[in-house]
Each structure stands twice: as C-alpha cells, then as structure tokens.
Amino acid sequence: MTPSSVELALIDRWQHDFPLVEKPFEIVGRSAALDEQATIGVFRRMRECDLISRVGAVVRPNTVGASTLAALQVPPDRLERVAGIVSREPLVTHNYEREHGLNLWFVIAGGDAQAIGGTIDRIEAQTGLPVVDLPMVQAYHLGLGFSLREPRAQKRRAPAAGDYRPDPRDRRILAAIENGLPLVEHPYLAVADQLALGQDEVIARLEHLVAAGVVTRFGCVVRHDKLGFRSNAMAVWNIPDGIIDDVAAIFARHPSVTLCYQRPPRPPVWPYNLFCMVHARAREEAHAAIDELNLLAETGLMQQAVLFSKRCFKQRGAVFSGRKEAN
Image (tube, rainbow, N blue to C red):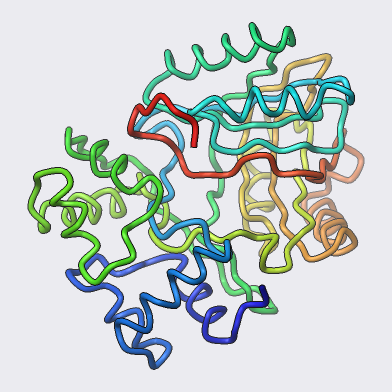
C-alpha cells in the first residue's frame, strides 16, 4: 500500500506528543482537516495495512522492567527453525536476520532481569547455541520518531529518566496499551474501564511517565519498510572508553541516526561497544550517512562493522502484561 499524503502527514506529525486528553483524535484530526470519526478511520486503516504497528508508548529500556539485546551465530540451514524458536518467546520483541557471522539478533524486554535471564536460558536449551548477551550500558540517543521529510527535521530529545516516581498503576497501564491504544473516540476511558481506574488517573500517569522520560515518546510507531526505508543498518564501532562519550555525542546529533547506545563488547566474537541505528531508503544512502559519522568523529580507522537487516521475523512493543503466549 502506498500511503496517501494525509496518512504521511498524520504519521509524521503524531509519532510524538500524541494528545493525552479525553478525545485525542478530535485534536489529531484538526492537523489534517479531518473530523474525529474520519481520523479514527484513517488510523485504523494504517494499522490494518501495517503502516503503523500501534499508537502508544515507547518505553526507555530498564526503567519499568528490564531488557537486553542478544545475538546468535546460527548455521544457515538452521536459521528459520532457530528464528521460530526465538520468536515464540513472548518477551522477544524484535527478531532480525542480519548480515554478519552473528546472524540472528533479537531484543528481550520484560518485567525484570530474572525474566530476561529465563528467556535466554530457554533459547540456549532449545537451540543448543550460546546467546551473546549485550545489555544496555548507556543510552545516548533514543529515537523520538522518524521524520519522513527530506531533509530530516530537527531531532527531539527525551528528558533523562531521573525524576521518575514509580507507581503500581504504571505497569498495569503500560500492559493495557502494549499493543496500542484502542482506536476509539475515548481511548483512555476504554483503558481505564479495563483496569477499573479513572480516566483522569490513566492520563495523569501517562503524563508523568512522559515528563519523567520513562516514556521517551508517545504516538505512532511506524513500520519503516512499509514507508520505503528498507535499508536498516546497525553500525557498530570499537571505541576506546576514554572517548566513547564524545564520539557518541557526535553520532547522536546526526539526523540519520535513530538510536545510539553503548553495550559491552564480548571478545573475541563481538569486539564492538558503540551502536548506531541508521534507517535509509537504499544501502548507498546508509553507507553515506555512516561515512559522514566517521568523518565528523574521526573514527574512520577504528574497528567497525555495518550489519544490514535481511529479514524481520518479529517486531512488537515491550511486554508488560506477563502474558505467557507469544504474540
């Protein structure tokens, strides 16, 4: 499906700051000269056609719950079978084949470190392969949306998650919307009724999570490949500890970088500690952006690699509900 100009405009505008009000689609529609019901219809169509996966919260790693990035080196003739084992784990949110000896990469996000460890243990037991576990050390840039305009719009930055006052309602609310807000006239009321809470409570807790930087953005979560950005590159470097913060600051400012974070190296199989995600329409565009990063940060001679995605086996938001079934 080729998105219409109205759909592109709605996606571009509402990847962040989705209204936390009683009737959000009434406000959203005004930006595209649509009434409320027409706006809801457009969002339902975009979700059905997989232009967006959901409208909801993107949660900062390891704030409410825990997460890690992991990888496997899978013999090519076993890749689809092993990928199926990994994808069936309910806490696995993303599962990709990438061009590297470590060829299967997945994110595990769940309630706590014990749940993450249990998932890793089951994957190792079922596949007979060792999991390379790469937990987050530091996040330098967490993408606040994905600009569809050329040139890319100025980046937004999330506040640090240092002023978060936990509340037992938060996990319940995040669990209720982990597959997205209901696409109805009063979505927060629908969530509140499901949880036996007040609508104002739900909105207030989400406002607090956003203000504290726990929710790094609240809005449309897009399917990049459906919008023409099919060259998904994970660029990685081995950066000396003494300069990694300075290099990461340069990388994080670049408009093509959607994520930038530090993870531990695991030599000899994985020597890299600085990761950037670059989404582009073509490989040449992605390589040009990475070349520019190397030029700006003077990292061209440092050990590095570019891992392009080949196949997506699974992609969804973090699981807060503790459900046992895979989605």
